[in-house]
Length: 157
Image (cartoon, rainbow, N blue to C red; front, top):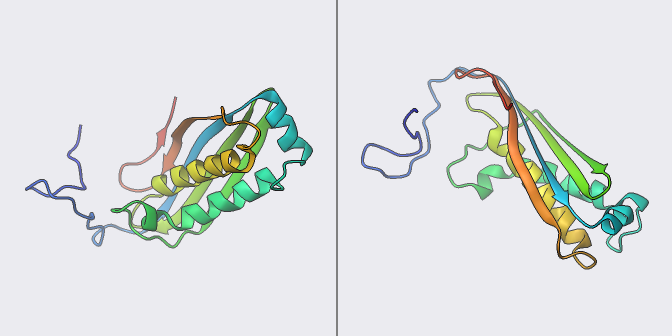
């Protein structure tokens, strides 16, 4: 296992210096899901939730969150993202599946941006229908693909 790059020799937190790294095309895909009562999923898919278009608003929230990742996670580099795509899909009988794809041409990867997008989209789904289902569970948020950069490609099994 390699050293943790966010700590200096004395163990102090630091932002990694990426200035010597080449700018390359980088992609990350993350996934997660919100598990809920079947009646809650029916409400979402029918478009009759009191707060409006649950999946559309969650998609927008996830995109906005990816763009603000450096504001949320202390040692992340601010990045000029070139693509953020969020797909939210009903998965009957009881879940909404979420996938984020983030791209950049830069000196560092976009894994945290993809994971942040999925996390905030999931929290938004929860927020929009919590009045009818407080037992929802946000589940299985994970990185499924990372491509580009010196370390190459990672693909989850």
